[in-house]
Length: 119
Image 1 (tube, rainbow, N blue to C red):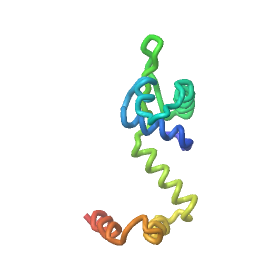
Image 2 (tube, rainbow, N blue to C red):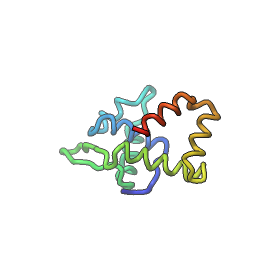
Image 3 (cartoon, helix red, strand yellow):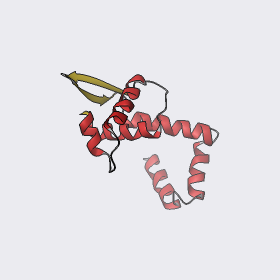
């Protein structure tokens, strides 16, 4: 799949589409909190996501039914890998150490993670 990244707005639309699994523009718009973005804005974002090959669509008359072409898990894995590469010299150890130092991950969480990995 593509190595392209998503903007914050594109990622938000993808989150809703992953939640829906498949949906029309109106379905995606319904998930946005108020104040909701304009229909044209979300439509443009969906068009960009199709160009980036993150979203596909089926045509039903004049309406388009959208669906993700990449799973949330796949995108999350690539995002984490990119984050570790770009900000932690490619070291997952450095990334986890950073989280513990900043109190984003407790030592207990780390110990539970290690137990799970040993299974």
